[in-house]
Image 1 (cartoon, rainbow, N blue to C red):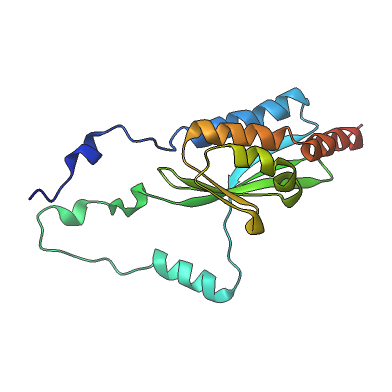
Image 2 (image 1 turned 180 degrees about the horizontal axis):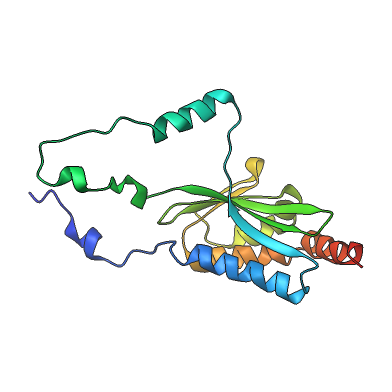
Length: 176
């Protein structure tokens, strides 16, 4: 019996490597189109709610260095950092207001989870239901997307939602 399934390693898996770049490019397009009056940003969300959480995070950074008897292993970096799951927020803002459209948890591979503003989610729920999404959790305004094509459809629905269009329009007029 084979233990390793090398076909998984060798196959070209659908991954999220290009996703962050595409979202950042779309964010830049809004800033360019509005001549900087309204900016969109896609950034990592770091949450430290208590001193205990900060202490735990610091303890991860200051872990003691381990030594092994394996040749050359002490010269190598820990590969755990090659698989990071990060939370991002997509926000629009001007000099006065900011508005977060969604949060997304991105791992190196699919599926990805998105938490969408409740009004947008309510407006677009029927569109989401018609798609082949992995999961929809209405009570949490969350969808789970299994590939880039579905994500881009959802992203398009979100940024073109009537609430978003209205907020962008109002943000532009507050800068005049």
